[in-house]
Amino acid sequence: MTHLNISTADGRGSALSPGSLSELNDRFRDASPEALLRWAIDTFSPRLGLASSFGAEDVVLIDMLSKLEPPTRVFTLDTGRLPAETYTLMDAIRERYGVSIEVYCPQAEAVETMVRERGVNLFYKSVENRKLCCGVRKVEPLGRALRGLDAWITGLRREQAVTRTRVEKIEVDRDHGGIIKLNPLADWSWDEVWAYIRERQIPYNALHDRGYPSIGCAPCTRAVQPGEDLRAGRWWWEGDPAAKECGLHPAQ
Image (cartoon, rainbow, N blue to C red):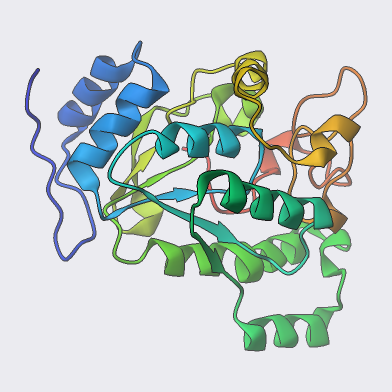
């Protein structure tokens, strides 16, 4: 196995060249998610974390990581507008795996200012307002969660949305200082995710059984109709599927 030079400066930024990144993706193109996670732990631990919104993909990754040592940090963004079912699942995951979930909340002053100036449900009024709300409640807390990390793991899959069709298993996250972003399930299908969950009887969000394939904040998520794509229930009042990202995962 070729050794690639992956180093960071001040705990931020990657020395990966475009050629090295391509070589890494070639190496793991047909590898299992577990193989990529094992490599990530060996390469980046303890400066490695899993970002979990407790969707179906995230519980799969938590299960996989639970079988690998040393333990990997698991963190989540509590926007203050999550469905009750998401909090119930968080407790179930804690009990099942004995994992300590790091919770990052938005800055109270920023939320208060935004709500005072634009209203509690400002996101329904314009895309600009919606992106402002996502920025305050999700993007800024993510920045804090990633401080000090050399790499982070997500549940992104190419099949999820038109904005994610080019997701690679290993990326350089230039929006967060050039740290490494790992997407072990990038090439998995929705059916593969659920086959894994059912085979291992992993706890999952009850909203999935009510037609919610993608679950975010309660006022911004609805069930999808037969034939709709997996993220049709996210910000459903906005017409352009290419704009349906909150800022955590800008399209490459």
